[in-house]
Image (cartoon, rainbow, N blue to C red; front, side):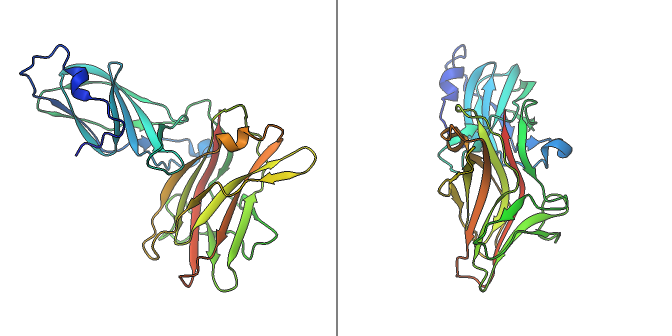
Length: 288
């Protein structure tokens, strides 16, 4: 089934120059996008690319949820440009091209009634700046618990849990340990004026987790924004790793006088389960 999310009629655009009775299409199929990263400077190559924004010879074919297979009423050699797309803030109705990933370009041949399989790969744009990059692979965790927190974030090295590298971060809530609050240990200098700022996060959780932005000012005061977004709990015992991209642009740009920023997490034990488990990894804050 074709999952064309922002419908741009393939047929109407490509019927120009085709005979009216010639409706035999070529097919284009894409299973997934992959990411290649420099792990030393950019962290793990985890990605949550959900969509492909496909252009052929400069003409938009549409935006398709992956995996996809679409008919193209043309044949022969063509130039394809494919942009990796994401769910902005994890919301299916707000899909965008991720501004920090490069497009994939290839020249390939279509054949009528045959399928062209493409395996697009992307990389971070060279101008991407990693203001924060916590992979939980080095001594010391880049988050410090707040004064009201009942528990702290810890390392976990269980291979049955860890998806990337050797360790990830974990928050456990049980018994009287019912609240976690924590923020990044580093003060980030982030661009304002509407410049793109995003946080990437891998998470696996049977308890909800909220995150937000702290703006810090020259006089020492802070503005802790209401939790920006909440990652809902996954069914207990059925948790999987998920990737989310948070758009921090508005929260950062509205604090014109801020001199630095931090990210904070908040978790309150949901109560329906004996032990709440929240695992996080590959926390990146990126901008240009």
